[in-house]
Each structure stands twice: as C-alpha cells, then as structure tokens.
Length: 363
Ligand SMILES: [Zn+2]
Image 1 (cartoon, rainbow, N blue to C red):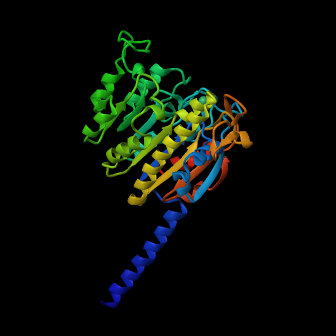
Image 2 (image 1 turned 90 degrees about the vertical axis):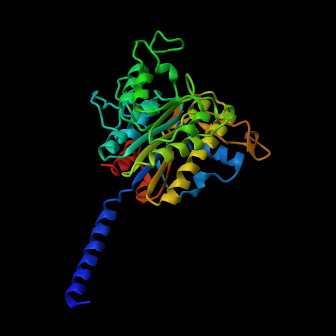
Image 3 (image 1 turned 180 degrees about the horizontal axis):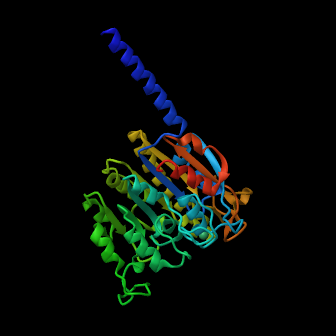
C-alpha cells in the first residue's frame, strides 16, 4: 500500500472514530423502539407478581429509573394526562389527551416516528380509544370523547392497531354501537389495512399492516383469554419489522389499573404476569435484533397496594394484601430500559421528561 493510501486510511479511521463518538454523546439512534406501559403498575404490583411466579422478565433489565407521575394540575394523575406526558413529553391537566394545558395540540411520539419513515403500532388490552392509546394517537379535550378519538386513530396512519373497542367503530344505527354519529370508522380502517376479530385469524395476516379488534369493549381479562399479550406483541413486531426504516411500538398492559380500582389482587397479579409476557416478546426480539430500544414503565400506581404483614401471604404467595385506596396514587413508578441509548433512563425524573427522552430518539 502506498504512503498516500495509508494516510487516507488513517484520516478516514480518525474521522470514523470522531463521528461515532459524537453520535453516542448525543445518544445513539436505535432503529426500533418498543415502549411498554403497565397501567397502574407500581413496584408492589410487580413484587406481588414476583411472589406468584418467581423470576420475571422485568429482571432481565440492568438499567432502572423512577419517575414522578404528577400531572400539570394534580399531584395524583389520571391516565390521560400521564399518557400525554409519556407520549408527547408535555405535562397537561387530568382528563386531557394530546393537548397542552392551554388546549394546543402537542406532537406525539408516533407522529415524530412517521416523519422519520418508521412504521408505528399500538397493542393494548383495553379499548383502543381508552386514555393511554388515545394519548399516542389523538388530540382531544376530554378522554371521554371516544367518537373523536377512534376517528383520529383510524386516520392517523398506524401500521398495526390491536385492542378492544369495536363498539366505538360502528355507526350509531348499527346494533351494539356506542357512537353518537353515523361515521363508519371500521370502514376507514379497512381501507387502510386488513381487520381481524379473532386471535385465531391473526396467523392468516401476512402483509405489513393489520388491525385486530377482539371485543366490543375492553379485551377479556388475561385469565379469561386463550392467548397472551406477548403473543400479540410478537405478531405486531413481526409485521412492523418489515419496514426498512424501523418501527415504534407502544404496548399497554391496560387492565392492571382496572383490577387495582377493583382491589382485586388476583387480577392485578395475573394482568401483571400477562404484561410480563409482552416484556419477554420485546426483549427476545431486541436481543436478536441488536438495534432496538426497549423501555418499560407505568403511567401511575393504582390502589396503594401494600404487602405489609403476614396476613398478606399464604404459602409464599400474595393472597390478601392491604389496599390504601381504590384509586390512583402519587407514588413514583419504575422505568426499565434495554438496548442502544438505554443508559439515559437511569435516574429520577418527571413523567414528561421520560416522554422527552424517548421522543429524542426519533426527532
Ligand atoms: Zn385508573
């Protein structure tokens, strides 16, 4: 090799090292992001599930953080304000979806991702129009404006949408519809992607987009389903991963919160274990892929679950815990991160700062 060629190679090498170090100083850019949210899942909910089953997929993470869940106008957040903070990086008032406290729309993670040419997906066990998925797909004054939320979601440009809530999709005149207008949202969805209504029909889906609506309202409880959230996440990942520019997927274990409101410890445990199957699906893929960031968190804690004395336990399992509330609490909730960029999620910060950290990877 000539001296000249040697010099050129060395210069290229030096520039290569320089640019690589600049990129990592700014936080690298993982190709894919999987953002998993356990609604109402505090540390005690995870602990109760741990007593039930032994080691969980949560324990595969090495980087952990905590976030303060308070909303703009309340120490104790609701899922709309919390979802908005996680999806947009902005604090807002309880009940508000995808808008600032002044009512201005704030861009969400999925909108940023689509601008970067990434595929986007949501997989939840509540109705798709429920607060958390709504925050990743719509901008409305009230979380209860389900008609508007469902319509905005259908038009948003998602590649994968999985959840419950068909009653929000049929026109008012159709039997079982909960809409107050004659808009046929399901037809709008069908124009964009195949829509299936049974888990068994998912295996026939071969393309790069699909929607699955499994129930009129929320999906059945984990204990009453013949499939796991993890299986839905596997199918979503397989489909979204066909996009060459990568994907962003939001997954919600929606009903940990609902079982918390009901002070149903068995339900809290089985919903948290179902959520753990989704974490397994995400981490297994991320480990194989090598360029996927996985972030797991909650929007808030529900029920003030306390594993406080001997009566709580029977044969090493949680059977009769103490509930301080049937509503949300202001306790900090955990963050678990894996993959390129995961180290920035260590520490203690506010809920909207978590949203900002995730969004920064697709800006
Ligand atoms: Zn709740």
